[in-house]
Image (cartoon, rainbow, N blue to C red):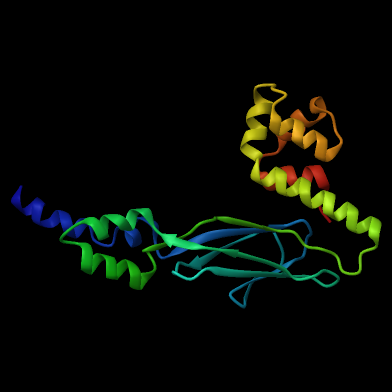
Length: 198
C-alpha cells in the first residue's frame, strides 16, 4: 500500500500529455469546395472538408483560407489550459515536474474548438449577389451555432423559437424545415443543405 501511495503521484504526472496527447485534431470546412487552408502560415489542406492534427500550444491558431476568385477567409482558435493538466498543477508532488512536462510537450494546452467553418466571399460581387451572399451567411451561421437546439425541436416536433427564427431566415415553413434538420448529421451538413455548396 505504501508503495502504491508513493507511486500514485508519478502516475498522475503529466496528466495533460498522457490523456490528451500533444496534438489536437481540428476539422476545417467552408461554403465552397477546393479551398486551400493555412494554419499559422503553413498549408495544411488542398481542399475542404479536411481534418489536421496540430501541435497544442499556448498561442492561438491563425487560419487562412484561399481560393481564386474569392477573398481570403480568416479565422482563429484560442488556446486555454487543458482541464486534465490541473491535476498536475494542484497535486502537491507532481505539480512542478509534471506541469513543466505538460508545458514543454504541449499537453498543458487545449484549443477551444475542434472545428472551423470559413465563409468564403466571392470577389467583385454585384449588389444582388452580395445580398444573397449576406442572407446565406446568416443562415449558415445560425445553423452552425444553433444546431443542437434545432435538432431537439425537430425531434420533439416543436415549433420553438429556434425553428421559427430559421423559418424567418430561410423563408421556408416549419413543416418543411423539420425533416431537413433531422436528416442533417452535422452542423455543417445542415448549413450546406439550407444554402447549397459551391
